[in-house]
Image (cartoon, rainbow, N blue to C red; front, top):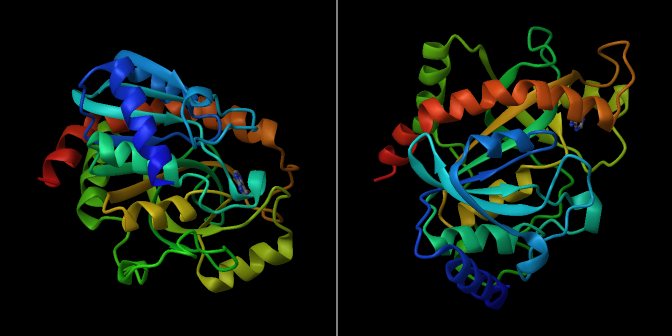
Length: 273
Ligand code: HPA
């Protein structure tokens, strides 16, 4: 794992020079367009980076892009691997280690999610305040160090959340907030599972993010996550759920997300100093 990350860092430096990104961003399904907001962009496809997952999902292009977003030196992971693709919850470990070694101290994760909040309709954005990862094989399993007993209180950095909330307010973007519950997928949840999720305290459901947040906190990143609501969760609306629909709605909301990130990233990375 470590060797893969070291080789990837060397290759990225060889290709992209001594550029030192401060901020890492993971783009979720259908949110690829956010990378278009990166200026002076240079990219390396995952196929050339050892230990990087090869995305198999439509809406995930599979490249590391570095450049400037809202004035901040940024590395964007254009596409992620989900547990349902490989059965592994640590599939994003090498990309996250690579970004950390390149200099990233803060990680912003984005995802497409189903909403359990009646007022958070498809197309809206929601800030993740906490998560529920019941059933997830913990990505730190097999780690042999005292730090594996990771404190997950305030895993979603309260000060970054405040910054994002204030930026959304300035832009007139309604930013909902809620607890994100991980489901393994790739089938969507049943209505009964969504009722159970509601009882557990979930506001959003999705198939990503939680394993990455655990890895990122382990690696010492400050973390925040934003969901793009693509649908009401199973049983809460008439429309059938599909990945095509997810990608389409996320794509339409990507421009709001890009504006929100451009408005806030400078302040987000400064707070980390
Ligand atoms: N469930 C799980 N993952 C999702 C959903 C959902 O309703 N929408 C987008 N990703």
